[in-house]
Length: 471
Ligand code: FAD
Image (tube, rainbow, N blue to C red; front, side, top):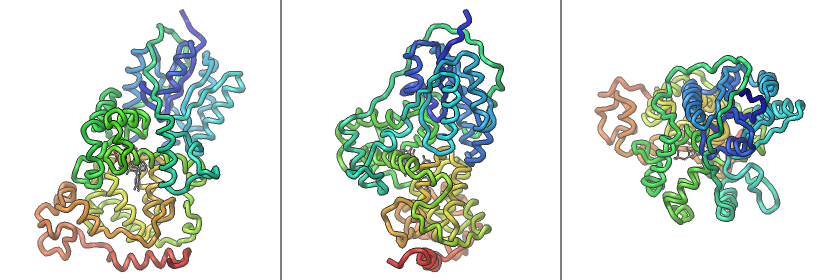
């Protein structure tokens, strides 16, 4: 039998079978279901998407093909080029019998424009598109102040967000039931290419990832508060790469956390509550991005700070990228990023602050470099994190609070365990000197510091004073 009518599920950053509302609703609607993924390397390039993330997506899509096949849902994985080509591609699916389109909303401006065009293609053909809001736990625009305004500061946002969670809880959608056998006639399309294998250290099996998430909630979330700031420990969930492409959803994380941590998730300062806070940060930046679409054009959130003329020394930038600044914690962190595609959150804050406030380089350079390397690169979180560190963003802390990289190192890597793991040239340095091994009589393989922190700090204050009144 040849089926011509089907529902099309367009997968993007929701590469999972469980808790996939678009997939679930399409399966409920009764028609056979076809899933579609389109690789768009030209557009990925424009977003500076790291090669390791591209590889991870491609590997996950191939695995998802197998997982969906067990439900009799063919996943057509197409090698596309650019977003602009998508309406024409969708038309081919409409011509082949797509009756309706199902997907999840994306929050970046270009993606929203792209999805509007695709919806219009379906509407022009008399077909319906169904879009669901699942990327954030609370849909953007749904967490507002008493006067109906967008929260621009995290703490009051979180308070309202938590109150909503207590009221409504989170809903997760079950895995859809297997559909009957279908044969579909589809257009001949270029098959998605394989990646370069660089993300091999990351599992792509959905059940394995769900297991990792459950294990974290069961065994580690309780200690998150005390361990999360120490890069030498394995104290965080390491789920960011999976959350970024949607192998697991934040809703699934919360639902599991509530199950494992009983009421602890709502007990301030408990490990579970602090971990939940991180997921609220994730939502916060999604909400901010939807409300302030100019952010995608890399505009500063605090507009006056766009007036700062950053010196932008390209050579200093290069040493930062390579992890050769002479500040061990910064260099160890950058080597972790370059080697693995991931960096611990405490270190992201330290290196971001160092680039902007010690090297006086525009935060946008760092933001872009991170995107080009991170397996978990996510525009909203990355832009939010960079602007937070640069004091140009939503942060309530004032610009004159400047991280000292050496004291940060002493506090968060007290024995230098992480530094030594990443910088073998400092393996023999005694604990006392590991945070500042200068001058270098014995460890002369290591680089000299490229900047004097106290002088750089004063220069940062001057730069901010050009656009802000001294506080
Ligand atoms: P956990 O500590 O276990 O946290 C759980 C999840 O909460 C994370 O996986 C992530 O999805 C979310 N989360 C945690 N902290 C934040 C945060 N501050 N903002 C938003 N979401 C958060 N996170 C990204 O996912 N992608 C990025 O591109 C990114 N860029 C960053 C850039 C800078 C300069 C900074 C300071 C932070 C950035 N973060 C980014 C946030 C954070 O560093 C990572 O999410 C975290 O290190 C990932 O490790 P984990 O999964 O073990 O996190």
